[in-house]
Image 1 (cartoon, rainbow, N blue to C red):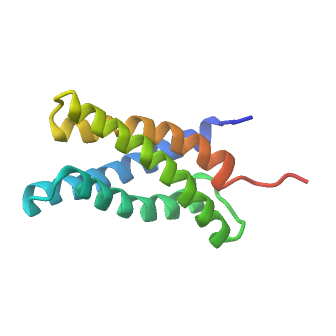
Image 2 (image 1 turned 45 degrees about the horizontal axis):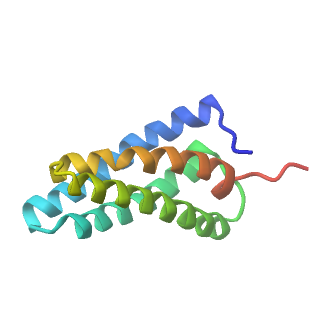
Length: 129
């Protein structure tokens, strides 16, 4: 069963705010300054965000002490799944005529919800003796 706790949830949200500012900043900068389309800009922003998020969540949010390589592999799968949820949401919003910048922001919601639960319970899980 998927679990959550208040302290890690608050930390995850704070990391998420930093990650969102960074990721959306990169997405918006790529779109505005580089004239990059929505999907490639989204890929770029989330790729940078995954590295930032892994580092902060491993060390601070979940204080995971297990092997980094294994946690990173699980984290990539978790965040890859979260990203697919994000991208489907963005594409659906765009298809409905939502502004590209707003659509990118809407996509953050399913990404964050799935990302927390799966990070806590899969990527940074701790084995209890």
